[in-house]
Image (tube, rainbow, N blue to C red):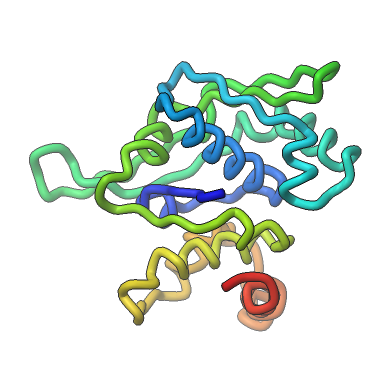
Length: 202
């Protein structure tokens, strides 16, 4: 199953828990598989059994992931840069991921409606986009491993990328007060992410 994201979204700065990242990925897959396109009003359904199957977790873990998402996902935000219309000036955009989220407990179904700013970043992908198979990230359990994998895939064609430590921390969604000591950042973020990427991805 192919995950496709606009590069602006890949390079965006955000912090999502593991289950939230996985739910966003499933929602993107659902959006693409409708075949009809989506709008800012589209309600995408994710069933707990779908989550359990794709990420090899128990049904109980899947139910909990969907239920917790109602409280957490609605408040999550991301930011990215975009050129201002008809100029070469950059603007910083800040948006929520979803404008609406609901959970049907009896059916174990999560309903997600993407925020208006997100819709074009996962649907209109004629030019600058990154794609990968969901299979590649299904076994990654570090939130930083998933983000780093997406960044690496987006840079695949360029072969070499130079990035400041501050930029990398921003893209990985690390708060200024987190992992301030370099050895902490290396062990708990970078080394863990690289090990998981080497073990479980292409």
